Length: 341
Picture 1 (cartoon, rainbow, N blue to C red):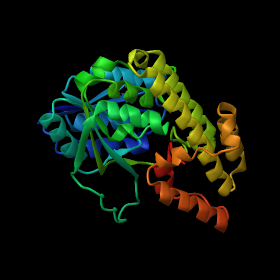
Picture 2: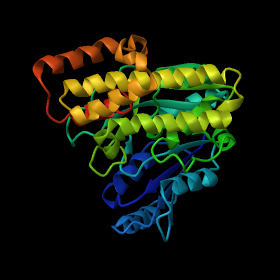
Picture 3: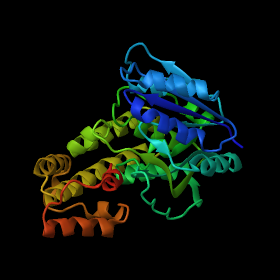
């Protein structure tokens, strides 16, 4: 079976690190290496990582003397990778049981596939029932270019990096994460992968379990949704100024992306207004109108047609509008809504 290297960048997540690493080691992958990269944590991360490395020869540990930033760890992992496939897993998250044994055969049997990705779900309390996957073990293969078009049509990234196994040769072709993109470096990276000639494999099954907590990188984005729009705009700008500039239909894709960001911002603004989150709503609607004044007169209905499950999402917003703002969303809701309404 295809070999795999898993890199786990870590900063101040010693309390989560063992669960994360053990979720990888227990996958049953026959050719597996794990690299923990600690970015000068001051908690017990080093002790936990050293203990894990001493317990299992597949685990290696590297510790930075100073905090170099998360992209430095990501790029160090890319340089380290030697196996046929690669996964970058955040230290506060976990792999779902059997995730690698679902992805690796797809890459082995389809050498033209650059990337195999699936869904993510919130980590649930111990003992709580896990929802059934909608299509366990079922994969869809499509041209990589279709993924790039999806990014541009929706203005969002549909890939959780913790649930994405990439072919190492493809990863090294596209290069490193760009330090200029603090929150959408992964989005821009996947755009470069999607610009390659070849295929992508996607499953609706859950491959990664995400831990929702106040220190997560996404927490600040949830507090100000307009920042998410601006970060995605920066990712598109970087891609089309570099690798995307040479695509034969670069101008068309760029227009799609700009239009999609306006649509996302407009409908997200209305959604937040219905929830009573007026500060977020004002910022989002201001973005939409500034970049397309027509939205002040005619809502961008075309964006709704490109949403995932548009009818259900619109119905939920209307329900909130009639029933009043609801309290803090459940963790599953927050993960489902990242980068969407």
